[in-house]
Amino acid sequence: MTTVVTLLTQPDCPLCEHAKQILAKVGADHPLQVQEIGLHTPRGQQLALGARVLFAPGILLDGAPYAFGRLSERALRRTLSRTPATTPATAAPQTRK
Image 1 (tube, rainbow, N blue to C red):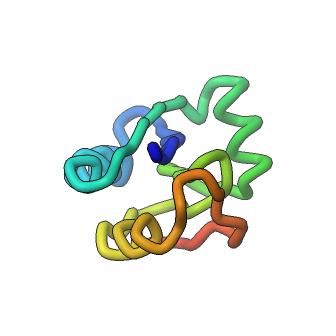
Image 2 (cartoon, helix red, strand yellow):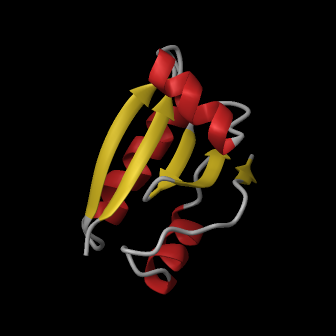
């Protein structure tokens, strides 16, 4: 099953570029459908508010908050290995610095 990853980004964001690279690497081993949405858009602001994303990038897995800030490849791989793609994680977003 494919995991839908929503990536909330902003322009000129080094952490957003890092998250894109991590998602590309992980996507080679796990089926991911990545959709990027700008935090400056109304939809991006709505998602960020609902997911309690404090700063970019924000990451949602199957619509559920996962993390914001620096994305950890190791933690993402662990989560994807444990969580079936059809069952969204329900934990609060994790801060990555």
